[in-house]
Image 1 (tube, helix red, strand yellow):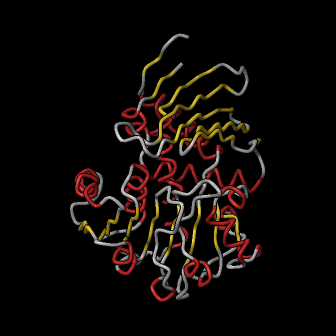
Image 2 (spheres, rainbow, N blue to C red):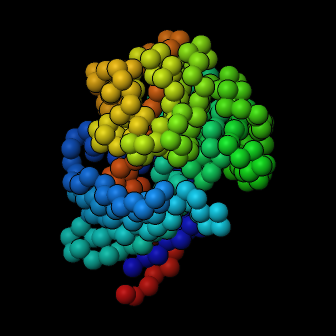
Length: 321
């Protein structure tokens, strides 16, 4: 069995490779060529254990991830991904689940940037300067020539260390700005990313500041979590989602649908955009909104991509069970 730690995952595949894999996953999703039960949650207080199995024609895999938002001395997200051979069922790879989650979630946001932002977009704002936010910006910068990044976080003292680490992953030509508020970040940004586990909206409830911008919501994954304000959603023509399960998994969809801020007909699967079944006019001066809660199919397709590239490049360590 091949073991791929954080370093091996980063060496095996580029962010472009992983965004392309996410596109492939969306095409598989649209065709229905997979079997993916609903994600299992086990919670104790603010802490959650997630179990995410999936299979397709190439094999099957299971990701087990813990989310402990108050982990001050440890990563918020920890876990592992087990890949099995599709013909024999034999375990063939074990991947660092935290890093897999980081790069594939970053790539999900990167795919949204690829399809929902104009090529002229040059600025990005991030609310939530954690690991997920880091890889969202790495993916965004891989898809667009970003000249300015605006950072906002509930704990301002954490931003400088984040900015220093981010600098090593992006172009030296990109300027990083530390803002005093989410509103400041939004006003200056063409692309807005939220990557928090907040239970209340982290963006300003001001309908005048979102026109023509892309908002990407990554953080909220439970019914009691919400990052988007009402005004953003009522101004948007549609909300694109990564999977239909998102409609009952996150407060960013449950609340708007319950309160009438969005209609069911306005919720569109992103897979239909990738498969060219729907189109978006990027010249319209309205907000474009994408919401992700993630799905096991992403993990499986991305893990398979990383595994194949690692085998080709002889990256990782083989062990006997």
